[in-house]
Every structure is written in C-alpha cells, then in structure tokens.
Length: 317
Image 1 (cartoon, rainbow, N blue to C red):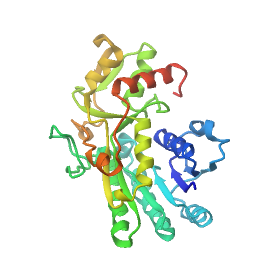
Image 2 (cartoon, rainbow, N blue to C red; image 1 turned 45 degrees about the horizontal axis):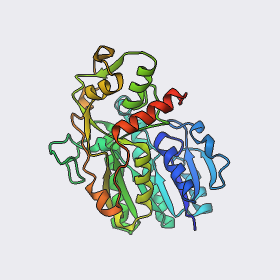
Image 3 (cartoon, rainbow, N blue to C red; image 1 turned 60 degrees about the vertical axis):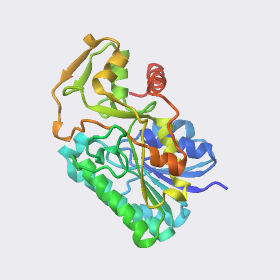
Image 4 (cartoon, rainbow, N blue to C red; image 1 turned 180 degrees about the vertical axis):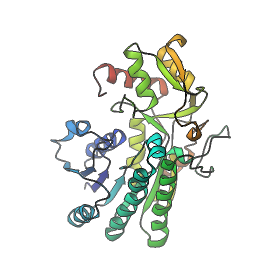
C-alpha cells in the first residue's frame, strides 16, 4: 500500500525529483509550496498522475492551512524541504530565512506530533565548518553557522531532534551536500554547475567568486532524491543526522575548467559575502551507507553531461 506523503517545497529543484521518485514508487503525494523558490512548471509532467493528490500553493507559516491538511489526510510521512535556501539572501534579510526555516519547521513539527507523522527534515552541508580531514566531513564534524541560513537550519535541526527525544516522534535530519542537475535554476539563484553550464553553452564568461580555490562535493540530484526518499522509509535513521555526498570534492576553479575547457573563458570576480564562504567541503557518507545502504551512483562527469544536455534542450532558465 502506498503511503500518504506531504512534501513541502515539492515544486523546487530537489523537491521535484523527490516527488517523481515517490510517485514512481506508488505513493499518494500532496505537495505544499509557496513558489518563492519553486515553479509550478517543475511539476507539469506529474499533474495528471493519479498519485499526485494535490498541489497546494501555500506557505508552511500558515498554521491554519497546515492543521486542515493534516486533519484531513493524516500523512504517514512529511518530507520537509520547504525553506529559504539562498545564503546571500539570508545575510541581506535574515528575518525571512529565520521565519521560513526555523519557525516554519516548528509549525510542521507540531502537526506531525499530533498525527505521529514521520519527519524527514532537509538540512544542508552549509552548517558545517570547513573540512580538515582527508576522510571528509562526517556527522560528528563541528558545525559553524557562518550565515543566518546555516544558523536557521541548525536551530531547526535541533527542534526536529528534540521532538524525537521528547515525544518519541520519528524524525531524521538529512544533510545533502551541494546538489546539482536538471531542473536547477540556471540564473542568479541557481547552483554553480547550472550557472557555469548555461554560460558555457551561451559562449559567456564563467565568473568565479573570490580565488576559486574553495572546494565543493557535488551530488547529482537523482542520487540525492533517492537518499531523501529512503530516509523516510527507514526506522534505522530515526533520531539521527545523516549526510549524503559524492565523496569527492573539486575546486571551483577546476570545475569551471572542466566545463569551459579553456581558462581564457574564466574570470574571477569580487566575492559578495566572503565571510560566509566555506573553503573546503568533502562529504563522508559512510553513515548513509551503513544505515540506508545508500551510495551515489552518478559520477561528476556523467552528472555534468546529463545536466548540460538538459539545459541545451531548453531546460528552464
């Protein structure tokens, strides 16, 4: 029997792929999204799917709406991806990020507690301090909230885990590393891979903030979505924090060269918020392997190739 699933942020980049996986697996899915980051067009191919029960345009800050949805559908699992996700925006306007990411998560938790709905909370690798170990960042690595985005996510993580310990609510905090792939925005709010690919395809310069020596562990979105979904169906991760990443990092300079193929097409520009840059991010996903038997399937080169093909075919800007 398919589960009744609430997916917040389901019209977003990762949310869209999580929705696809849940629908492919035969679950009943309700998507809640205020479209501040997401796009309804991301869900176009699912709108006639019998498993997609409703797309609700609304905010997780609307307690009345949440109460009505939970009372009517009594969800088995809530995948909580809805959030403000932009580091720069959080520095310029911390209130919006705190309200969406911390208070919104509290409102979700209150409903989930009422109906014993499992919570899969999407956090971020941006909560971590820089990587200092060749084995990569595991879940015991120090956190460092270098932006209000990271601070809001750490606050929400602690609330999510407190509901496990205080009320016995099944919850899990997941920390995917930098995710990229088809359906990611290729404009200013997009990820570095999507932006670089779009510029390369249009013959434009690839701009790198700062020196470009900062490294990222880049996870292909379908691997990420599989990780997210599996966390909802495993009791082994309840009360846990779990990472997911490729296990390989690449300097932004090297990523740009991999995509552009020519250093003359690359330019360094002044960093907008250098104080919130994390110099080295490398994921250790051994806990995900141990508890979920999850590991990434798609290499960086293959993922970039798939993403480039999607953008070249007219993927959303």
